[in-house]
Length: 299
Ligand SMILES: Nc1ncnc2c1ncn2[C@@H]1O[C@H](COP(=O)(O)OP(=O)(O)OP(=O)(O)O)[C@@H](O)[C@H]1O
Ligand SMILES: [Mg+2]
Image (cartoon, rainbow, N blue to C red; front, side):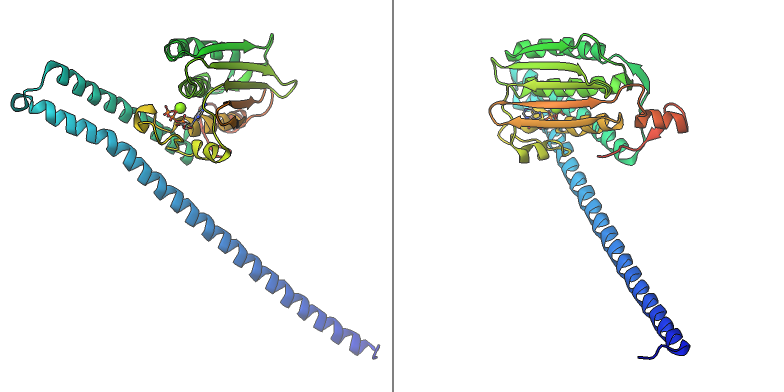
């Protein structure tokens, strides 16, 4: 084995060449992996987008066809000799469809604003208990009509959270309305708010209703995802409430979890950070000023 200076420098040069070759190969491989990942992500985004658009056109067309069909019948009422009862029924169907269309359009606008990161949230200190009290009071009539009891349990003292009270009210109202809607007569809906030490507030909306499997939970948080296909879907709602609620909670720097047991009931748990912690809303205010758009942490 040669140990002179010449041999050592040759070995060093060879080693350097090897190192460069290996370095280049690793770099090429990393670039390939990154490119593949970007391509897969782009394909997935395109697929999700086109599924969303096709669902959206279906959801808009169904009620619009009802409006067109029944308004045509009303227009021809002379030849058709419609009874007063028919006329009232058809006008009611047109009104239901128009209301539904408006709800779908509002929901789609919310979702696309959330997805494009242009959703503006207020950032005030909020008393969650007060927001919950209002939401429960609003839901009482619907719960009574559905034969479902509704009760609110509030911890003695709850820390303030930072965020947008109108948007949080939208979240709670949607979850309470789901709990009432998917609980058969005789069931119970309980809304509970607890303090989590230094970590903010935990809100649980619990029902003793129809429940969902794990797969159904995954469907339910997708836009237009409705689980029970047997019901007349578009009269039940738009299927946009849960995905919007989840995104709004996440925009507040919070967490959104659903646990459910089929035929036993569903728990929706929301964790909101306390006002003094740096939430995304607060971070946005610190950097851009109040009311600026922020990107959802996760959608
Ligand atoms: N508490 C619940 N118990 C059982 N199933 C539920 C519950 N909440 C939601 N789901 C299921 O998830 C689906 C999606 O809920 P989401 O709130 O997004 O839509 P929706 O209530 O059908 O419509 P909208 O909210 O526009 O009125 C529901 O259609 C239902 O199938
Ligand atoms: Mg809903």
